[in-house]
Image (cartoon, rainbow, N blue to C red):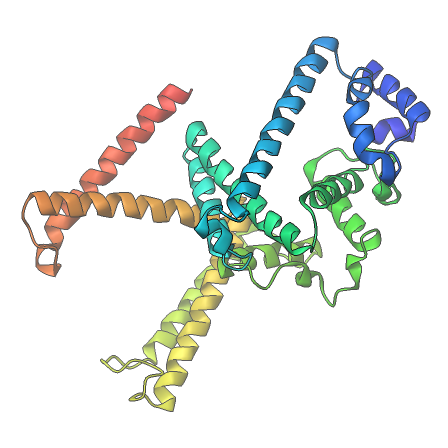
Length: 359
């Protein structure tokens, strides 16, 4: 009965699914996993999916598999002798920036709610990830097949509420009823089944190489899971105000002037004052990130949207100033502000129209 409660299926489909699993076993032995998924997919589906849904799903699986095979073969041609000089010259390390840039472009497309653009950018992310994985495969480090199979194993292991025979079943202590309980279960599986509980601190689960804004957000989320968190939003706001006051106090210690800190002409006192300001600004930013987290907003996504908004508006200002043959300098700041407000008004009007069309 407990097995039914945690399986993720309901009604007759659940009963049929569990009955099938008792006969065939799930998941199959590792040596038979590829054959199992290829040869019995229709048999598995028919016990918990209607025939019309099953036919469509099998067609989708076949089409997707063929498309990925085509991508894999295309990458192989590009990396082979006589292929593309640029692709052949790349390494996993050289592709890091491309992967990051394509990921942010995909995030922008998703944020803009442009499905066609999102499809293109997500394709670029998949290309970069697949290309890097292919490089590792060429080096003999791991194959793409083993990478994907290990990913599937991890998904099954971390979803015992859907796959009752998964290795993570021992961590199902309570019925999973909401996203938060799923995340708590994942943490238990990571610590007890995957052996990740031997780290010095839970914060070690956050990669040190993350961009600072993202890392601050992730560190706070991890600490909050251990109960180290503000009890209400008002306390977070008070912390921001406190940190802002400390920034102002530190800024008063910095002497104005043309000498840059840490330069050859600077001195220890000036450098120390600047480091103090830097430290307090970091504390302020950290507190603002915490405020974002309490509101359920990812600060990296929020800042990315603001960056794009600034880019669009400033580009409009540049264009209008050029068309008006007005130099862009402080003497013409009022004109620039006027064009800025025009860009803002156009943007608000466009967003209103887009929202009307969407809903």
